[in-house]
Length: 402
Image (tube, rainbow, N blue to C red; front, top):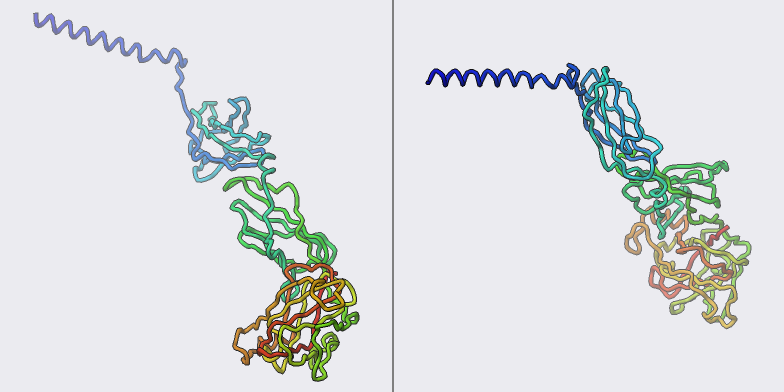
């Protein structure tokens, strides 16, 4: 009985082995006795956003048999073939996919070897493509509204802008130079100002910013249009040959032979204008001889009392085109409040070379913006450097929009 049982077991195992061998070979009927080969995969598939395109990048497979890569999109309707120019995984293969819509795409990359075998492929999803809709949202980098421009001591024009947005690449500044040529320079996002050394005064300036839609983008988008920079007027000195003194009721008189016309005689040395003793505030009036939109002015101190004695420290400038004959203030408009700043900041009576050099060139003052057009100027002194009840200056120049 035991022997019969062993014989049955033996035949059962033998039948199973024969059966398994038969089924293991069955797949060859479907593959026509050929082996299935899958080429190696590309690695690190990524993209760079573009303008109605995208740039796909990957590291090639080290498989030396790969002949090409095929890129598929739109559910396989569209495709593009790329030759496998390298098999070094340290290299990169990049391909630009053009003529896309402003949309989010998915792409599939399939590798093919010399025998036509295809890899299983791999996908990259959420590939954002940018275009006109994105561009229409872009705005030019704003200039600094509080101080859009300035002329530096060397006479060169400086334009001032606010901090740039994160994706700003540059801002193009377009202007006319002193050779009457249209010139463009770039303001980069890490700086807030730019100097135009050859700007032709009185000409228009425009600017346009450029942005990338995302870090590492393949394309830069310009704002659709240039914007106009605020007008930079030509500044010229008012013609002192037209100046005349006025004497309205309440105006301060002169003393010590220092007369009012001396402050526009072109001489920055003594004498100038000196007032008698009188409780402050005091004022005097000048007829500029023409209406002018004033931009800035200079005052020359009496150098023998530099930042001291009767040199004005705090004062106001008022303007009018039809001053009241009774000397009242109703017909006057305040153009600005001003305080003389001593460059060194040292105490009264202590002056440095910088203090003297500045005073010799005239203490500069600027109106917050070009004034309304005025013909008559009233200079109202509130305080002198020495706290005196008189004041003196030796020269006064006004500048206007040309």
